[in-house]
Image (cartoon, rainbow, N blue to C red; front, side, top):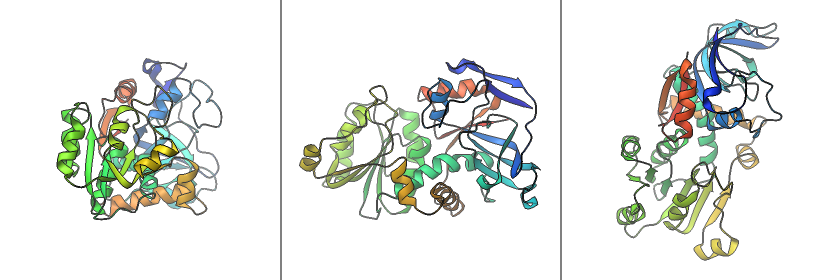
Length: 334
């Protein structure tokens, strides 16, 4: 099979398209003929040698990729034969191998793909979608809600806009540049604003009139976040799920002091990790969120935006993602 392999940590150019041996499924596992593999910012960090949330560094050489969708074409010993031939999607965890024509994972990680979704859309939901479903747990969105979504043309942002609109909220989506603003408009936001323009907060204020934002779903940080916080009214919620934009270089979350939160009369909550899992509850909260994302897509609530690259262009996809030049979820297709 062909796969993307990483022989040494470093820039995107270190990702090589090579022919390697086919993997074999072990007991309780399946082998998937991959139709789509998800690309995530964390993949780029791991490529650089950052350990992140992985329990230990991955030995090199390695085939990156933690999200795959395709058809089950081989079973390991003891695996339920009902899986054979099904279209499935799985988050394969920190045992990588997704950037390939064939990938192996435990059958317990599999979800059958709803008939209305293609493989790339399913991949967008299994990781990015489950995160979006985890984020929205923290706000009771109604027709009275006014929601601000920075990075609204991104994989998570597009889903947050769609979910909030389905709940009846007024949604303001922020994006960088005219092309991304057009995507946010097409995605259903009531107002799409280019946050690279210095007067963007005034545009939002003019649109809202006497109203204030009630929820800020924030995965960006930096100057955009601090300007958005000034649009959040008393009683507002600042839901933080990362700071991948301008705040990344400082490594600091856009948290205010308690005195400043009291003055503004807002709440702030960081939701990634244990808080999100605790909120989802159950014996397997990650799977609960995955199922929720797939179900909302099957119901027509969520429509993942996908930017597709051939598997052989994984390095190009990584560079585009790191340079904030992508729209929606980035997916590799063998």
